[in-house]
Length: 88
Image (spheres, rainbow, N blue to C red):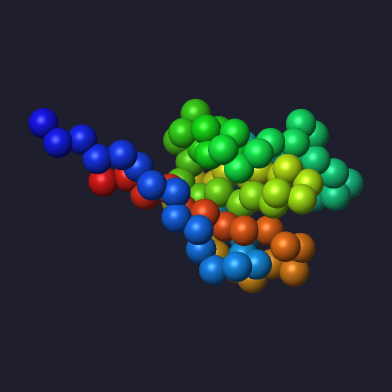
């Protein structure tokens, strides 16, 4: 057997995932606040827990937003970074 693990690939700097379905989020867009800040590693675990493939994270405030495959990559002026979960 040959098992290959999933990889989390960063996208271009200053990007985020827009649209699609939000599967998990600790970021409230209305209040611009994070509830329960997460590290990037914790955010990645949330992606696996929720079967999400698109991750937006920001280390400075601990935001973590997990989206489905229908999300589109866009430029961010908030300093977030988008990641894609790729599993063979």
